[in-house]
Length: 153
Image (cartoon, rainbow, N blue to C red; front, side, top):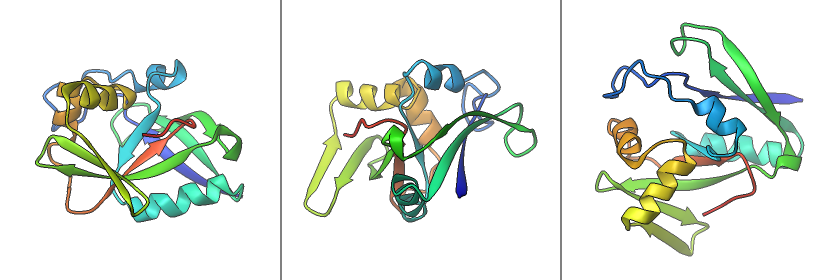
C-alpha cells in the first residue's frame, strides 16, 4: 500500500515574521483545532487523496523535529479512508481572500473577517499569521485544502 506524507512544521518558517517560534501544529492537530492544511499543487493532492479515500493508500501526518528538510520527521498518525479525509481546491484572490471551488458549479469567497478567521483557525493559525504564511505562495495555480476529518467548507 502506498504512503503519502504530509509534514507539519514545528516552527514558523524563515520568511515569516514569527520565524523560529513554535507553531504548535502537532498539538493543534491532536486536539482537533488544526483540521486541515493548505498546500500547493492541487492536482497532485487531489490524486493522492482519492487513492486514500479508495483504500489504496494512507496519509502519514508527520512533524519535522527541527528545520524543515534538514531534520528527521516523526510520525504523528496515519490517516486512512475511515478517517474521511478529503481535499478541496482553493485560490487566493487579491492577496487576502480565499475562494473555495466546489466541483464546477459553485464557488465560495471567504470575504468576511469572521469567515477568514475561521479558515485560518482551522489551519492552526491566527488570521494575521495565516496571511503572513501565504504571502509568498505562488497563487497562479489552485491550492489544495487537505482535510484531516470529514469537515468541508
